[in-house]
Length: 459
Image (cartoon, rainbow, N blue to C red; front, side):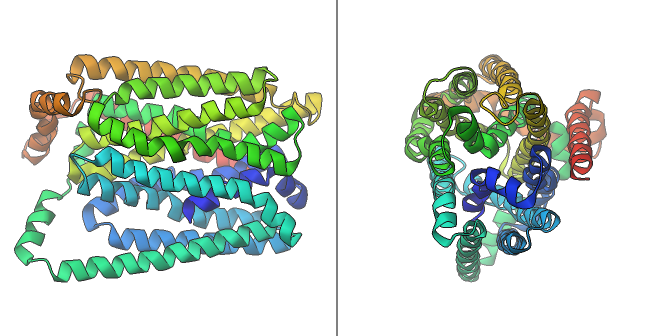
């Protein structure tokens, strides 16, 4: 439900701007309302999950997603921009947490063999939902003669997801009743979380956070505008533009399950991350600065979208202990949403500037695509740095095959376990250095910038 609802707004961008009477900048604020509330929530959600478990968190998240989509659907009847923003905020409160819940469950259950494949199945399912959403939003609107029908379809799907989650909660309660108390106690002890661990997260982990901010923010923001880009730059009508834009979601459906098996067997996570950032940059160059059919650029973008998230999530799951995985993935998701919030608003401002100078023609996205090119180059530099750090400091743990990964993990075991020793020491503050605070300080600064930009443009 969360992923099915995520891209309807992008598919109907031109219609929504017309119906609500808003500018591109206001549309950017509407899109970023989801990522803005999720700049902090995934971290808090991760802390909550690490401390109290996934069942309660997942139920709360799916309810908020469903309720938010109900408010959005109602707003289409009143053509109210503020009400739609409120609905998007409720939706965002749930959508940011549910992803952390899903990835924490899989990361804990499949810490070793099969981790990449199981996360691949989860990503594939989400991309199928996104593909169907982008492709069906216009036909549903046309079928009922009202653009709000597409949002009511979102609400129905989210209600079904909420019902399924209730069944999951009941099943987990039944499993717990049949599990001996001694085993439950061992599991709780194994997954006990200490918040001080965040201060000792490894440098390579924070590099993945930077990559999440740049590449993740770039992916999300581009998916919000690609339908209108195809319409304006290549002269397609709304229906053709929406279906063409949905191609950007299609390759993960076919590639990610294979990549899950590939990462488990052969590794090469860092190699694929570098390739992902490079393909993102190439796709932007083709879509923004050539008149080659947009399908080619969108397919290349789609391959980037297949390679990157799986490489990042499974890499983080390898280098962090299970007890802090929810928090680690929460920070990862938070950084992505901070990046998405900032980029959404920057894109809206650049497009409005381009539209004022050249009206809404094939050239109104020129500034936007130039910005995405620079963003892609930065992402490629970060990914290349991760590649070399893994190779030189982590014995190629993230790019090794199944056998080599066991050997690399053995060599890096003392390093991986060191933070657990630090935080359990009565004198743990003696191990904290100035640089341990720097990533958190930078993330906080970017968080403040994203929220200030969002509030300013919303006002």
